[in-house]
Length: 300
Image (cartoon, rainbow, N blue to C red; front, side, top):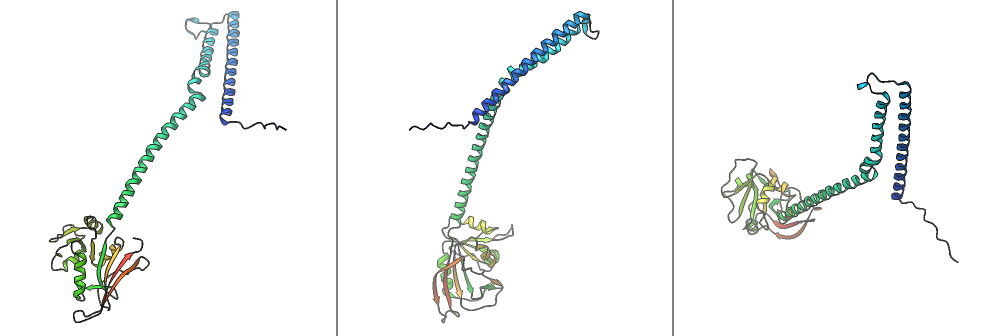
């Protein structure tokens, strides 16, 4: 048994548009035909009246019959109607609108494509800049010696003297950039030898012998971009800022509390993890027990 295939009653929107356009054109032409018939009748009727009563318009030049003036006016209106229906429509009708819409859509598509390329380029540049930034900040290390209460120093001076800590500092930083604040630099007898000294100062005219002077931590890091491991060495405010940039902390923890006026920022164990420790007891050369501790940033 064969089943009769169900007819597809779905009407394509384009077909609907064609039907509506055809209906609109038919109505236009019918209105023109009506206009034409009415115009011819009015001209004929006016001419009959004019010749029957031989009325001439005094306001017209050359004493022209009024039927001719009326015929001229009606003829102009008819011509305009004809142009609108049969001439202008071909340029400004549905087809013209469709062509214009397609043209505008093409232009818009070109603009969108250009905008997309621009946005893609900007995104690529931003990604590149972010990559350069991450690369630039990849191996920044803060190095410090602090007490159990995070004390760093007092009156711009160290509170203790630990010879092994000084050797540890020298061995780690030798050959690298050491970044410091102005007060830290001025607390030293001279620039640290065998290292590139970078001093941060807000004073625009500040100069430092055998050292580069910059005016922000970011500028100091940028200056050290070719160094595979620049070090931030103090003081307290520079350490505080450095927490956002560093991914390693080389810490000497002195196992005593001290009175101080400068402190190292608190190390957040949710951000930093301890990866290495070396303990040292106090002896004849070291008045305090201490530990070398290395922290690494967890998301680094």
